[in-house]
Length: 185
Image (tube, rainbow, N blue to C red; front, top):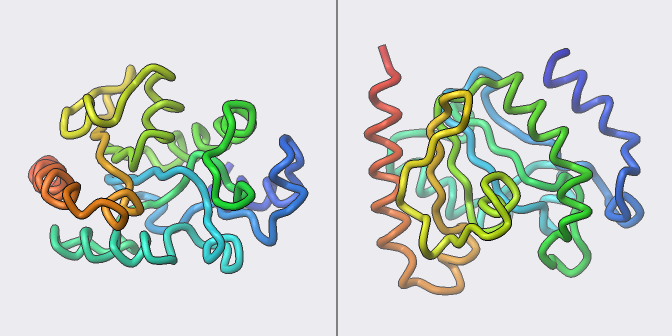
């Protein structure tokens, strides 16, 4: 199965109540062979309208962060825990996330990234564990059972709300850049 086929299969998804109010499924975007994958929470209003993750204000900040470490969204792969917008941009419920996680796991299997960046607590708690705390775990390398290096950091939207998070995110992305450089020929 390819990413395109998986995205096509998802178009009729009704695994959770988020399907009722979506305009578009926000599957993912970027290089299907990316070594670096970024995973956020879920689509917001702009993403739901365009069907592309991280296109609003947080996405513009993410693009600037990537540019600062000499990457573009075309070189990485960007996805979310849930593929449909939660009403009023609320945090997805555990049930909603659980309904979408098999799709995300399949994306990860198909892309085979060497590094995954978890953007925010929703991504961290759904992929690492419900008791995980972004304030305690950000900036620390974790490793999956399959050997993928995982870096939790603050979500760009959190940085927009609280500028004191800029420096920690910058420090995290400098570590991400150094690890990414090791993957290059």
